[in-house]
Length: 214
Image (tube, rainbow, N blue to C red; front, side, top):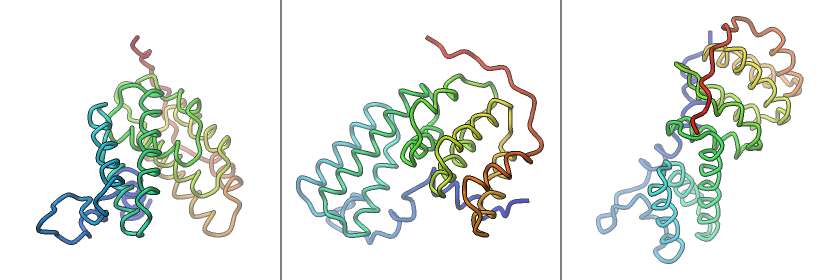
């Protein structure tokens, strides 16, 4: 059984980024914008334009705000903040082009997978919609594996195979818990995944896939 607070912490870091950073900013009477601590001028204006662009395109803007707030908290130069926010928007756009119409949480998690080093082509398998299933947990685990040093091809192959075999959310969470525990004990990340994927139990029967529209 996975410690509930540990899993929630991982999910928050991928899906709900930026909330704590936003709440930590002090109130500014003359400027209530979340970007109030950013020096006024061209950099802040560009960040706001990028967030507006995301909204117009139907993309979630909170990852962009989170990235800006992270830079502000670390006192990063405004131009660098703009660069990172633009990069984040690029990941969201690529995720949308690759997956089509998925909800915001899935899109943000897919963007995190790309940011961690996965290739857009590796996400293509997840484009067909599977009735009653969400790929959110698969993406969260995938992004974390890459962040922990699991080789990209190995992580992609393992997550994709589990997904195609019909693995449920608990299977992905259990795999994540076991692999991160092994890595914490000093095992090579790739080896940890290979060992645990061979013993992963409880795979569900494959679920019929609905072909993508259009």
